[in-house]
Length: 441
Image (cartoon, rainbow, N blue to C red; front, side):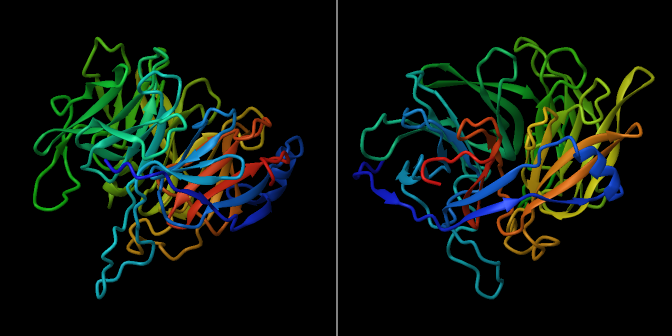
């Protein structure tokens, strides 16, 4: 490990932009939504460019230096609030953020070493440590918070070979302890869905929650090897939430859902539902990122929201009971947003009803996806009920940034409004919601 002295960077504030959230109606006349909107407070966003360099496609916040303020973490580096000075966690990589060319392919990596990033106190010393997920097939790393000491952070490994493009940090068993949910390469070409938690200070325990003996599918095929994977253990689509109302966290994948249970009842029972083919029969393997679970239609049971990672489309899947069994009906939310490779739940207008944020991932496959040259929209979607039906209203609040592979929603400045963090090939951005300042801005 390189222990050269830590270098401090004072990152210039490249852009501070006030954004009044403009709304465009999708499924209903403007007068319908105007009546609904009259009782609501419309959010106003301030956009701050934390760093214009491509460092990560994932981002999270935590009080890294324990000064009471939320800092920003993107894997290689972290930015200290409120002035957002950059500090290295490990040696920063140099990544390519342009369109792919067959004639002159880049010698730089097209993807960063931070496809996902979270914080958790691994060694139980009261300081947040950092988890980073490079591209699939590599280890998940955790970095020990040095508590103001100079030098790069000590590096260790959670699992040796992870898979899945939307790894999650969740409390799967309701114990108050958060763990990593993703695929792992158990043996050559065999991928299991696993849940890894801190067993003791600095050590990890991995449980197989979804096994290929429960459900297996072949594909998508990368190279010449045939990969056999449990649902949710490979490629796109992963979420958690209580679908059947039994109090346990179920696991949602693009191929169906696992019924949540205690950690003594593993692997979990799997219920096959072809959400991916329901979304897009011609190319099911390109669908979904994070899969969001909440009661969209407010009928007392949870539904599912999903997006297309590499094509067009955002959908919600309405839960119904038919002959005593859970089934789902697909509804289209948007069909003109491409590469929505990240989606997150929040309450953007502070009305107590969940909204979700998504947008186009900028150059997801470096210009090789449908709609790659469309505007890089960033939107928050508001669900409401009218005439016994569920409608969504699109609030398009930025067309210059888009999303990466992970959106972080949190009240960064503790003013009661959900703020938004994005990191992608355009850089790292904070969208502050509301009027309260963070530091000098």
